[in-house]
Length: 280
Ligand code: PAF
Image (tube, rainbow, N blue to C red):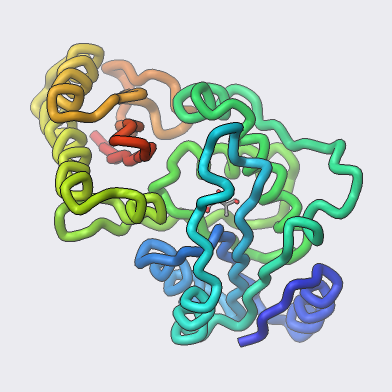
């Protein structure tokens, strides 16, 4: 496995693979790899000749007071995991390498970036869209793999790729969960064992809401309110619990068939997100 930190060297390697006719898959990450990331890589391996993974904790997607400085950096273990999966190249640029220019250009995907996590984490999705478009320009993959755990992020990236006519297929990968139901996330490492046990309630709340919808309960706001009040009683601070349309993340109505329930809560000092799709 090649480990490269410079943009010029990544470009040279990728050009030679592309010129040889290889299909390139790309998995962008911020490292601290868990089974969710491993699934992205495994899916990528099945669909391409070469798999490139980036590890870059991107400062521009963290707000003031967020966890940029404490975000877990586990480069050695990450490289071992990627090597064992047969990844071809890991790109690990420094902040200075990625942001060496004037940085007066930002990619902002309006509307879909603005609600939910975008409302609380102002500027977060601009940071994500900008770094992902930079990484896309550096790697120029045929396909890029993103987890459905960050459902709004996936929607933002899809809109960006469509609007900017980027010739990249975005491949969604299903959420990987612990046996308790808790969605895998690097931020789960911030939780105490009691908090981790409690956090399994998030998937329960999503499943209960899904069941109500499948049974035909028509008042989605009531389902949302009941879920929020149950989560509050259990010790969470809910940010949102919203039944939305998968396509554009607008509030879902009775006529909509492809739904996703999005949730974000604070547990102690940790922000957790999860979601569940429903196809009626
Ligand atoms: O999902 C992530 O880990 C990050 O938001 C991404 C896509 C790697 C951009 O920094």
